[in-house]
Length: 191
Image (cartoon, rainbow, N blue to C red; front, side):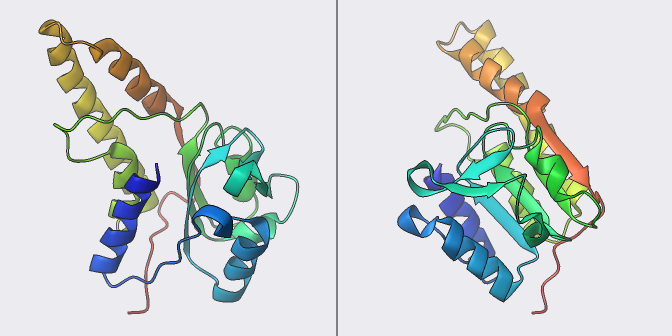
């Protein structure tokens, strides 16, 4: 997953948008919280592990919980690529504020195929970086998933191995992708 996250960092760099990467041991509660508090980023992308109420960083140490420090997320765009985070956590972080959460209420999975150059889950961030609204970014990723499912159906017709396994993964992500909060919010930089 970190490879696909690096593609987003490159996209942001191409758009002259500053980023901060919390990979490996830097992905801990203290460093990430301090950064959010001090730098006040508008867009947060959290890529890792989760459950219905919590997100985890390096070595599965707790980063965030739906029971504490939710003010850190107030009025921000938060995209979480982690299992089940959209079930409870995502709803809680946008309660009583103008923020938006995009994530997955089921287990998030992906299947790589060298024939396909884009990953629908990355499209959310690419669209946000290019100034699209949260709902437009969400919908664009869903359309990409549907297009990929059509390709997979053609693979199944040709009896290609693993086509239906790929379909199950993509369908689960499609059904599990959620958006809560301000659907018209846009990522705008001061550049």
